[in-house]
Amino acid sequence: MLNTKQQEFVDHAIKKFGSNELTTVQLKEANANFGCKYAPQWLIKNNDFKIGKSLFKLPTEGDYTPSVKKVKKGETEKVLTTKAPETQTVSEAAYVVSSLTGNIVPQKDPVFVSFGNYPDIKSIIKSKMFYPVFITGLSGNGKTMGVTQACAENKRELIRVNITIETDEDDLLGGYRLKDGQTVWQNGPVIEAMERGAVLLLDEIDLASNKIMCLQPILEGSGVYVKKINRFVKPAHGFNVVATANTKGQGSDDGKFIGTNVLNEAFLERFPITFEQSYPKPSVEEKILISTLKATSKDDIDFCKKLVTWADVIRKTYFDGGVDEIISTRRLVHITQAYSIFGKKIKAIEVCTNRFDDDTKNSFMELYTKVDAGASAEQIAEQQRQSDISSQMDDNDSESDDSNAI
Image (cartoon, rainbow, N blue to C red; front, side, top):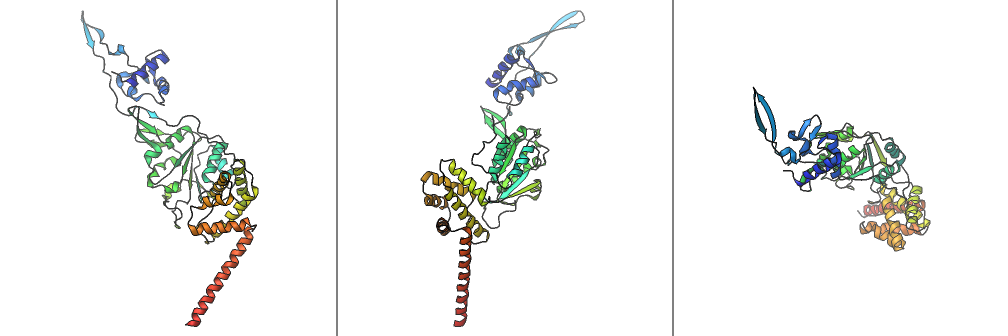
């Protein structure tokens, strides 16, 4: 006897094609009505239903009644009765299912401003060539945003996967899942991207362990053999891989990016190109903040300029080793959004810098008061230089006094 799901398929297929003898292509087309890409495995793997090359006979009630065949033996006819095969219920995975439906092209961000490597990334995405890209840079400087908007502008489908230390082959390629009481194979994001010819974005790739080595053949562009379902998947035209990271896959020596790992050299070697993403120039960052405020129906160009000056001074001090924290472009956007909500500039800065320790937060707030009073980045830098000189002279005098005392 057929189970409920199998009977529903048989009834639909016969109704659709008006026959119970169907080809593999027709079986796949009928199975699409149930959200499946392939012919039903319970049917095509049962030799009792196969009547020719790629031709199968659907099980109906008539197939299970005894059949009669006349045989001549000399002048005497004997009637031989053959027993129809019993239907077997197959317990193995019956379908290969997809969890992605409809259009997965990203939406254009109205406040996005092109800068840095974006034109090059856009050219690669537009070319539809298989050319893996590795993008590295500090947090919050628009690495992921650039890839997303390049796909949006070129109307390319994008599948984004956030990598963690726990990400493994099952997460990436797919695995067996329970669906409607049956064990089915569900494609992972990598296989989905390959079959759709989409862009695969591996976000925070440097958080991964050696479990992502299953991506080695995929990064060569030649396809991958999925051993769990005994199927070789070749990438469709347009498929590409883009990875983002805060490091270059060599770990983080300064401890700023805890959890990042040293990636396999052979794995990294399969990315032919690496972009080093830096923060936008002040003029570009101003445009981003002004656009963000305008999107909330606010207009305060002066505040945006002061925020950029403030962040610029902090970054220069950070790269000189003067402070341990940095203000990213993302945090500046957060501040402008907080300002649009609360309507108070100082409060917006305070709530968005509360994540830092008290000393850092207080120094950042003090620095902003100088910028807000009209000091330029050059003037603040000069004040800081004079302060460092004065501090060094005081240290020298102290050492001299200690020497004389001895």
